[in-house]
Length: 97
Image 1 (cartoon, rainbow, N blue to C red):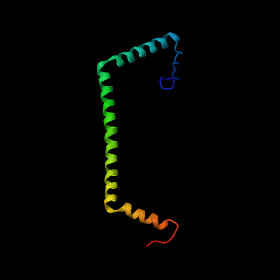
Image 2 (cartoon, rainbow, N blue to C red):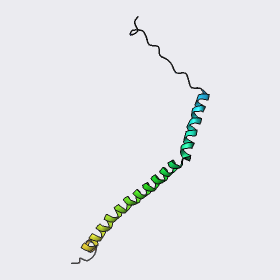
Image 3 (cartoon, helix red, strand yellow):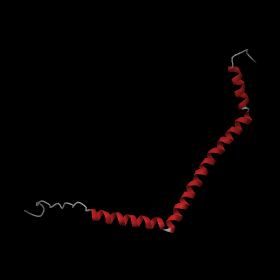
Image 4 (tube, helix red, strand yellow):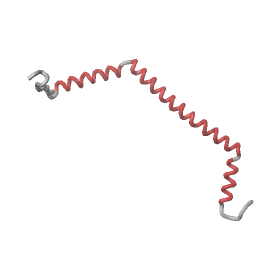
């Protein structure tokens, strides 16, 4: 048999022991606590939170302005009078001109 036709030996992974898992979890815990205690990381999180709130308020204000503008436009055009006239026309009772 040549090297190309020989069956390849597959190495099976051993099951991970409890001690190895505990070491891995402890390292992960140490890294997370180190990151959370870092002043620069805390500053970035605070700045992102402030930016997110500012963007949310900006979006809310931008939605409110067109609604106010449209309401003022309909009010100046007499749309409320037109709606009142339509309501009166739909009410039961004597016909009004």
